[in-house]
Amino acid sequence: PAMELLGLRTTIYPTDDLAASVRYFTELLGVEPYFDEPFYVGFNVGGYELGVDPNSDVAVGTQSYWGVVDAEAASGELVASGATVVSAVNEVGEGIKVGQFRLPDGNHFAIIENPHFELP
Image (cartoon, rainbow, N blue to C red; front, side):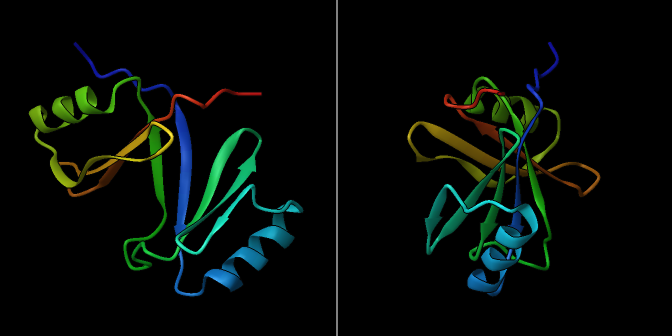
């Protein structure tokens, strides 16, 4: 069976200067972040997450996360398809689970299980 993707959920922008990036996106989007911590800042953009992460590698670039119903099951399907684990599925809080993979062609692929996500 094919892996069921629920659609894009989150895009994370790595940064070397969290304060400057947050100021930039606050001005660009015209909204304050709904989540603002030293380890991650999140903006709600039309029901989707635009995240700014000081712990992600700017050289890796922007990371988009595809929604899945079950991150562990999706991880197993990705590995079975030839993907390698970059970051094993882990819970990042409030039942939200993420994982990152490298596809056989070298591309980055990330998943998120977010029981709180709902489109407006």
